[in-house]
Amino acid sequence: MKTARYCLEFVNLGGLLRQGEYLGKANSKIIANNILAKVFSIKLFSHLVY
Image (cartoon, rainbow, N blue to C red):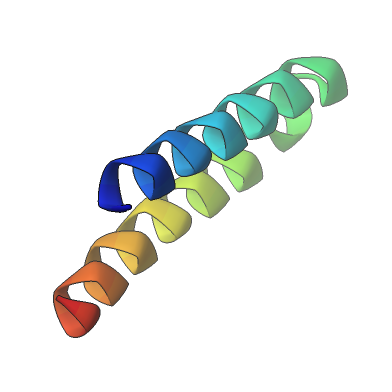
């Protein structure tokens, strides 16, 4: 179950990265911050849950 969730998150991150490429370099910093926040929140959440 845990691995499936991580796979899903990686798919989401891939989508965000493609979105970043599509939107261009102006928004890349914002998107990078969103990705970092998302990864951090996932780690935090997994520590709370497990």
